[in-house]
Image (tube, rainbow, N blue to C red; front, side, top):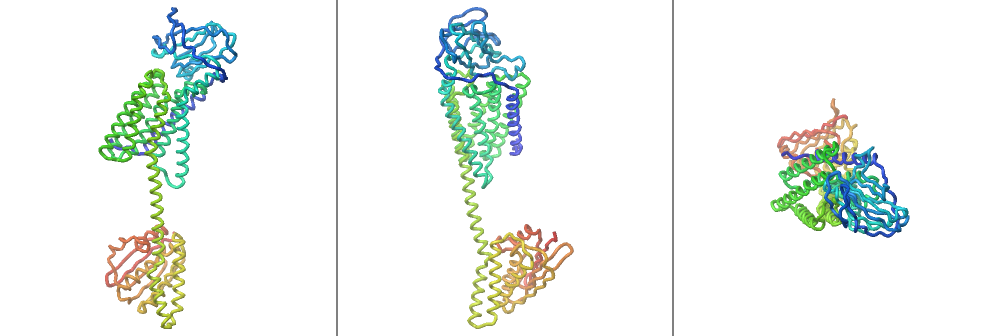
Length: 591
């Protein structure tokens, strides 16, 4: 299969996240809350001596939690007498899984959940923590919990019932969910830290795409754990909305995870396998959402099916990563293989830690293991980020050394020292040309220093020509048989600073210098119909033009041509014949 481009994968991810967001927003808009605020008092379990009634017949007493055989849609009645004395703040609390619930005191309905004839879809039963408020007038009366479900295995599932002050019931949940809350807090700090790292590093350098996928993965995992936490249901406005979001994230997270893992695959064959997994997972997401919307698939079935598929897929992916590491010995794959293997082992242990998965609640053990797994993956990400930081440091060091070399080269130290020696000799001999040498030398040195500070500036050609004249004046004092001709017919245009002088310097140094320091250099500028031209002519040794653009130094023809092309879109034409001379023409466009 042909590898999918990152842009196409990002489109898939955007579609999935977009639909998930729209579902969450829409269901949130059409939902409303019927829960009451919780207050404070002691709580005790009410698990013993419940009388079960089905099909108008009484069965034996049961102790909760219990799983009673029942057909889909069949109502099961559990009854028990309330204490003889209860306070104003008294209430009961219990979990239900995809059950419609009614709570009666004698014949009075004091609570119901999962019944909404006007909007049944958005208020269908989902895993819920039911809190029922009672008053002192209900003391000593018979309490009946009526449960039914469209899914047979949940119809007779009764969990523990707690009784007491409503805030005490909440406090008990906070204590029970302590491990889960710690995992959630750690994830919040992790995501916040990753966002801070992203903000700080984004200023200096574009972050690796794997970091962004890991950040999205951590954020979605955090929301997934929060929406699946029973304690969060207490504060939710609509349990069905929360559980729908939880289920959507259950299908979105594998797509993001595969996008993250794809970035660590070293070979195209492995990338193709991951791409197939991404497409398959996305297809499952689309099919499940369509079937869910048209009513052919229900939440419990979706939860179970996706769980089995993703567990098998994760095991297969772990095996692929391990085999890939064995074959390619990639360090990133080793970290990923270790993390996946440990997570897979914890998933197997979870089957024994919490064998009754009818409750469809992850539990603190799974949540803590998930947080630990994300931290193991963080090791892979930190290696990437640290690698980018090291690359940035290396690049800065290379730029610094390169700029230093450019500065030294542009100062032309060999020429400066030879000019100073010539000036010293002329001064000792009392030559009248020494003052002219000092003037030309100071002018040349000042221009070179300015070119180092402003190496990207465009200047009038007249200034560049003045610098060329100073250079040629110095060379004439050092080479008495050097002839110089300046034909300045047009200079009302701009060129990059110190872009023409290196051409002249090469003509003197390599053309005339290799010809016994005898010859003529002509520098002319003139206007053409489509622009301007600068021509440097020498009758020196000449050279092979095929070797012209091999060297890459600050004053080489390759560098000069690049600066002229990038700065003013000029073109450079070179004609040279050995022992005849060289003509270099720079064509400068008018616009």
